[in-house]
Length: 70
Image (cartoon, rainbow, N blue to C red; front, side, top):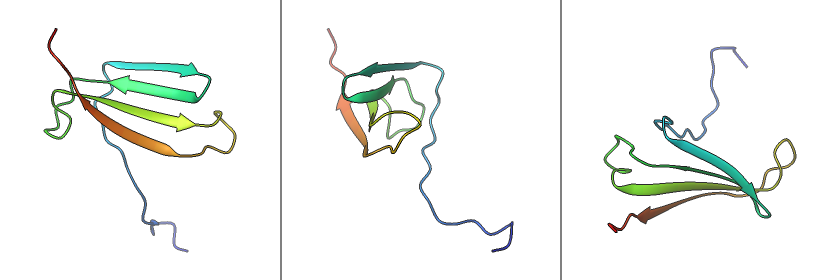
């Protein structure tokens, strides 16, 4: 394969200026909000990676939840 040839894949593009990364018994979770892309505006986006870092990482889920005004 030529070094300039790229395999198709998936990319996630995000403004990570307000990122919270933490772990729990289920894996690693990253949260961020205030995205400038219209699909992310006024939403809380969560990515959960089930598994351990550096080992076989399982499912990657993206869940969008509308924020409620308190």
